[in-house]
Image 1 (cartoon, rainbow, N blue to C red):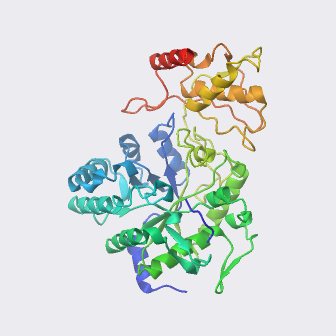
Image 2: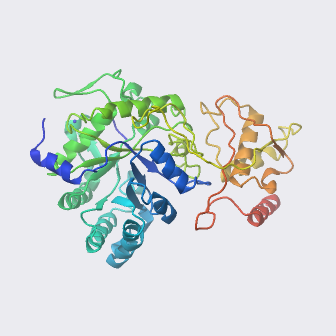
Image 3: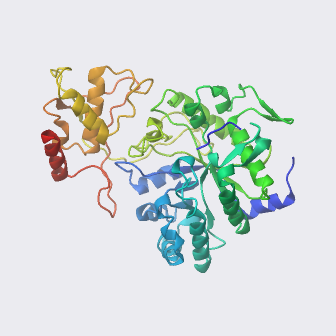
Length: 482
């Protein structure tokens, strides 16, 4: 995720590279993550993608059911290899097996239009402390070799989505861009591999993160309205962070002899909850501004031409780690059940707005709330709420969030209901030492939506999240005796 705000005409070779290696499908793409307690069935998501005119999708794994649903859809697909598999991909045999199982089969048998394999996800991120520095490139090399052996070397390209913290500027301007000193050698070798094999450099740029970590960040510079004080880089004017950050990368590539490598924006977006700057209004402003900014195909000062980008993300994911911040579960342009959060014109539909998911099946219309006669000074209130939030999702609670206006009783009810819904409305999930009760009256209020869970989707696998009744009963029993 991009962490700092910062970029001629270019050679004919670059134009040829763009023609040869950039995607043949135009239009905006979307990241489709699945770290959710209750996934929408893949068939519903694929239909929703098509209804919205989204023609490219970026995955973080190679889930069989997801890829099967994408068969014959015509959507261009980027599959992913998680970071925890990079070490094992250091074996060529393992890489060949992975390509056979997760790429070849789907292309040959299911007619899935797989165009990229993303090897790792931001593996050089500073917070990983070098964990994947030595395993990323060997994994990429072996996947590339396996693709060539499978006869897919020209059809499927290897890439590695990187965080914008892999480069920096020596003078706060894009023209000062270079790869971060302590990993310069690793990044240079990775980019040389991409260049040698006609593969794109994939970068994730997040103005929101810059605003989140730096209270002095110029807010207007995150957006595309032209209201920010522009940055003058030797006569080149930058009025928004995206262009400046993107062109800092372009300068870094050029300085290291790789000025012709195509660039993909792997992730860009704005969350809608979990922080005072994360709301639907700002998300709409950013994403709509970005769509308008790239719609003319003019690109950035250092890279004129169409921008190849994937919005982050398609759907909220309520099981994502919140270590970076509570906003991590709220990046979707649609809710967990496929409802548009705000008006967004992608330029791909007749209506000029997002199309919701169709035929979504919900659990029964009932919610778990704090009993009206429960006392707030009951000694079981605090541990009950802590327990619920620890195993469910309370990231919409807090200062200036969507549910920030709830009183104490509302906060407790929200926590209880989140746990209840995630556990498929099991009776035992609405006990909490006798403090909770089930109601059929929707407790949602204002901007605060008390979730009503969709039916669980298991596909060909066992439930990944939530609990069976037996397991839940055991957990509750153990909790009561601790």
